Length: 109
Image (cartoon, rainbow, N blue to C red; front, side, top):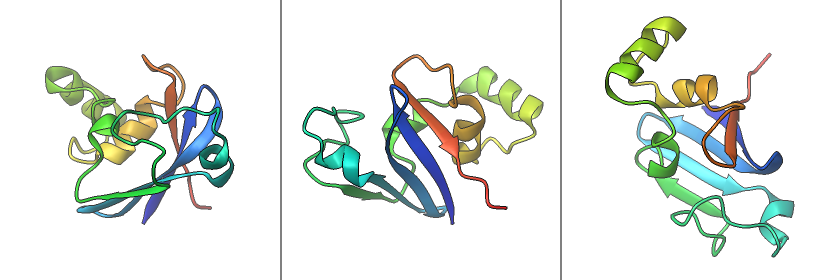
């Protein structure tokens, strides 16, 4: 199992959890979920429920990863398998993203 923190404008919004190649969970952090002033991180992950399950990486997050030749270049440069989307997301979406959402992998020590 791997886990990443998801931030919206620098505020911890939730956690992205990979329980296996075919099981992903996104869970809003309690304080963020209970604050009506905080927006959902995407239209596809509304704050109507606190936790979402999927058989694949949620499209909102997979769309933050490069595609095509850029994906191949990033994968080679970072030495990360092209199919390991969570690692690529953690390596490329930690600070300078197009939107307000950033992702940081939680590294176990």
